[in-house]
Image 1 (cartoon, rainbow, N blue to C red):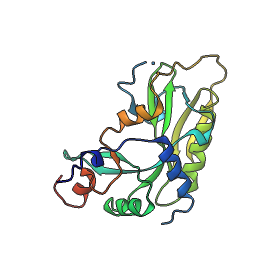
Image 2 (image 1 turned 90 degrees about the horizontal axis):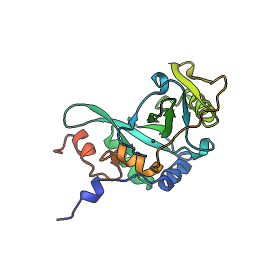
Image 3 (image 1 turned 135 degrees about the vertical axis):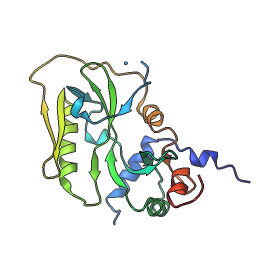
Image 4 (image 1 turned 120 degrees about the vertical axis):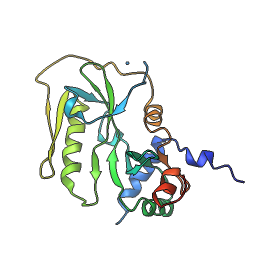
Length: 202
């Protein structure tokens, strides 16, 4: 019997994420990282963002699916083959969203991952444009950002003035994302979350 363990345990790869991001235009339809979590920046006080520009930020497809305990959690979809990715989308009930994986650190040294929507099923540009503006501001200094509503999107503003320097952990971006999304990266049709979503046993 074929060993599907490796297939079911995908790993994040930034180059692959960039390749997928390039395909999207043609698509239709501190030293230890433990404790780094996905958080919205609205309650994180002043924070800053890793990377030199917006293009440094990985953009990937994600979907929220139920785990075996009935909790809805976010999965990354990371498949470079467009046909395979479309089939994964079908097994996700076509509920995928395109999101940015934004590595942040707040004023108190707490690192977190912010994943704002870049494209939703409604394909509104408000979320994308306002998130991009916040990311670019955050890559150039300390900011605050809050989600206002669907008509306004993210509202962000800069710190009035500080020389504070962020103390980032030494873990690289790919390892950080792999830890956060451990067993939640879908790169094949036999991922247990997909099997469960279509009514199979997993």
